[in-house]
Length: 402
Image (cartoon, rainbow, N blue to C red; front, side, top):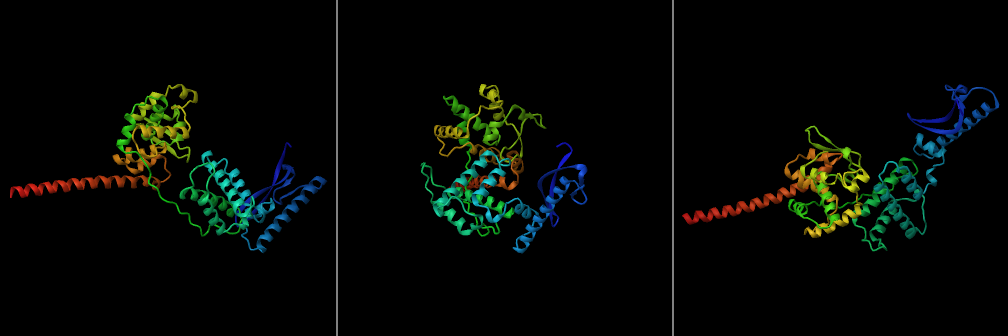
């Protein structure tokens, strides 16, 4: 095929354009770029030009169909009809599969598997509600969404797991909404069934360790090596703010001298790819020194021995119990503890905390600021009680003198 190039049809509507491969190739020297046809009169050239004329006729027909059916005319809509992605025949499960394949390179595995779980529940709902495994996108409406929400709230798992909470239900609805939005953008569905639906998330307080609770864990010497190791990795996160996956991925190359001559962590969040720059506090540096030569670290080329998130959280439950901490201790609480107890409570500006956490905007960090405001409120209440006591004592002494 040397010297030959592929032929593409370009569709342009209101300055927006897209290209379609017509599955033919031609010598560059035999192509009339100005007229968009092949040059020459040999049988091969005549056949190509005849084929291209058929393509033009089909595209024009799809354009007229969209106009006559009063649908939005876009270059993408014409292309979709040409290649067979006509919205009238697309189904919900086809949409979900299309989304999951398309998003495979853009979403992290942790997020991808959530979409697979949502697909599972959509499938269960279709069987229960409609006695079928799929429905057309054109059948989606507000009632479908409302019924799906009701199904999720009432669903009782057979594996003894807890029933879904409100926010878990809303997460499944939101994931379905994102996929349906894709169908709307691709013009596979005429009307957005989510137009009048409003997700109702319940705001939860971010759990974190108080100064006393953090000290209790730090000072506890566990006789079991695995608990001691998990404790140290958890405390490291409390003093750096790194999430689980970012701690597990941390390599010696991520530790560099910062602008102040001290060691800093230079990395990026696995979840968002946002850059993270964190000066390493003394306690965190000591933990790095303890594990940088650990055999399990050397095998992986990481600073810390690797644990699964599930195992870490399981061991943290033991640590919480042994330290007398009455909280559902998970690894993510370390990140919250860094944001509140370690930094904001000690006067580190919220802008600096936001940068170190790798947040995309300040509003995300302000959730922690509200927690700190509550702490300030509690401290001031205690101060007021102390001042009241001192005032009562002063009045008592004054009466005694008089």
